[in-house]
Image (cartoon, rainbow over all chains, first blue to last red; front, top):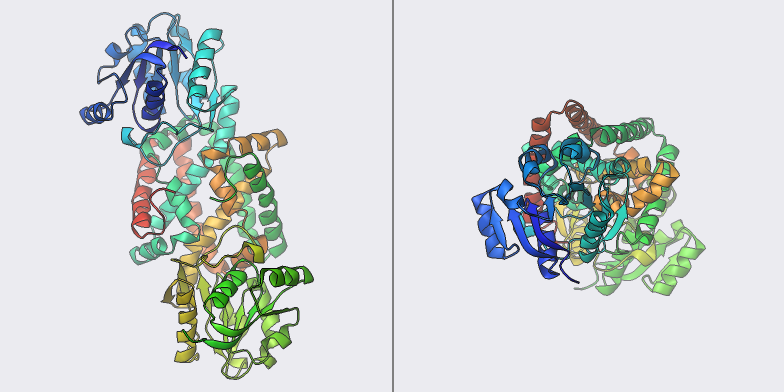
Length: 297
Length: 297
């Protein structure tokens, strides 16, 4: 495929940024790929890994003449970054991101102030609990969903280009309303992370002698939570606050269900517990059928 | 190794029972292995799999002259089973189990009424989300912990034999006080299962159109919970009630932590959330160091 872009700028080059950088290099999607790092140390890592044509700390310079600028930094940084790069974005430039919440992107970016810029936010639903440019890999997005939530003013061509980029990465692309996206992710991702952080936090606060035994016997279920709860705290702190409304709504439902089960345990209501524990098996089968997980892994 | 037992009776031949049966056959740990099934269908499966020397529905007959009887059925069945087999247990017989709660075993079995029987309860900390004799496999216990909580009247020899059995299965054996065991498992296993069932249940109750999208995008964290929440509802219903005290105590702590985070999200207290999300990373490293999980899996 001929290069989709002349110049691409990735702002942030952690797990996601460095993975899409590897895809862009592999498929020659851009003639020139610039990465913006947040520290000298990251610049050195990126140069050593050879995953970008140039690396810089200078935001405004990096976006000069770029056809596509992708925010790969935590959600909480968008407002400040866009305020800084806004005046330097060229007419027709595509502004996109990889954030896990989509409604807030529109609030923080204020596209009406960026004349001639096409806002095409995206969320690749992929990740690991590791962070930084060394943690990235070219296959990260393969077989995963990528949700695109274009602004209504974005050109058809700009949306197509972002779709093509993620298809090149091996993702299944889906265009969606940003608020609907946020509602689904609150259930499938944000609440599970919040709960995992909480349960691991609860264990951390136990008496010291018990903590070491909890680690020792973690295979009984707990260790799965430690993996999720090892995710980047900056990224996930931002997600909770940026998707506050949907997260609090789904958390409320979860709390009601948990309280009902707590009461059933206290009063030995075995049938109620058994019924609740039975209905959850069906959804597991659906997850396996949807090929979101191998049968045995 | 010479046979540890002349006759062994396994009461219940599901995932755990059939796996230890496979170990007993492989290592010739018993001269005769009897399995008690709960249905004709299970009898046929066991005969077909060839994992026991004989299979029966008749409890009392099965334990006649047995040196060791192992309860591999749900915790809620112990009381009734022991009432039935008690008079048929021979003097010096070892009575053991594989249940996930240990305090209740002593309450339900009333060893003082079983003269000359050695009560040596055990808990192999291993399992999958699959059930039934076909789901068992000989390596299930390898590298896993097995906690033994002998009654104070059990002979030294009987405790040693149960230890040897689980060591043959490849487990690391640890002798522990039953109530201490229950406290640790409430945190490492019972609460994680309760929470997983709850979160998957909350998703199941969403509007039908949303549920299919939750399944579609489950890779974001939710699918890990569906695996845990697919575990056997009878076994886990029993566990919650039988370890009620420890589960409710740890659930209370969890609820306090979750409420604090909920409040922080509502009031945009980013620093509090970030601090909470940061402290959980350390325990993940300890889990990996304790070799309870491979670095990448």
